Length: 101
Image 1 (spheres, rainbow, N blue to C red):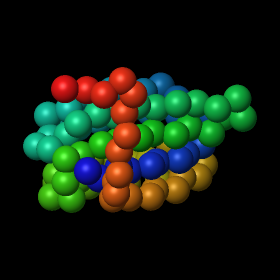
Image 2: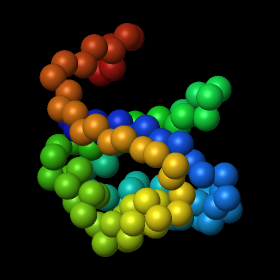
Image 3: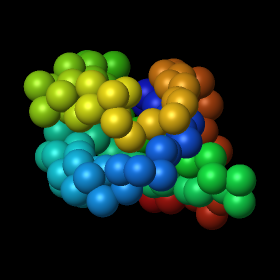
């Protein structure tokens, strides 16, 4: 499994435009081959953390290079984010409680 950790801080001047683009990206990512899940958390200090899970690197790469997502990332750098950091990670072990299946 591939997990992307996307940490960001939004600019305050483009919140409405951001919400429109984010809603489209949420819809689009769910349709991508290999997509498993994603969730966003916001800390008290305003930092946002989004975790995105894909089955494998191929699925993740498909999302990363999807033309609409590339365009949204460009808009994010230009208009939405004060700062961000992306980490793409391979899951080497997973433990669940209670066990599933």
